[in-house]
Amino acid sequence: MITRCYRLIACLLLVLCCSTVTAAPPPPAPGPGDKCPVCGMFVKKYPSWVAMARLRDGRYLYFDGAKDLFRYLQAPVKYRPSPTTPPVEQALVKDYYSLQVIDAKQAYFVMGSDVYGPMGHELIPFAKLPDAQEFQRDHHGKRIIRFHEINQGILTTDRKSVV
Image (cartoon, rainbow, N blue to C red; front, side, top):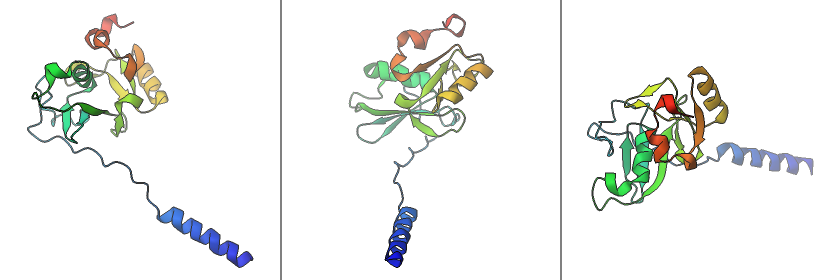
């Protein structure tokens, strides 16, 4: 009886140790010709700031930062590369500290800080609220916001006037 229990425990441990959690593969890095559809900047030069939109057909659009990603999300017809560009299925940003790609809908964004992105004032993304709070304190951020709070007013607000 005890031997059978040990075998069962050993089998369970073996299964747990050998099983792998299959996470979605990371999006491909932008190539030298990939441009932000909002501002036209070549994004490969700024890998730490790259934000992405995964399209319904599996392709990616790359942006020079979270602000331009949100500009695109709010006016895709205005910025889409062609009339046949499919809708966005997922918005992705990079956590400022770890540089891990995270779902923009789950991120915390610090606005109004003294850290600038390639195009100036930027929404700085974080996977964890404590990291966003620490960054806000260290870099004089004005506010922490979530995906659903970002609107045209936020995107056009100057750092000095952030409430």
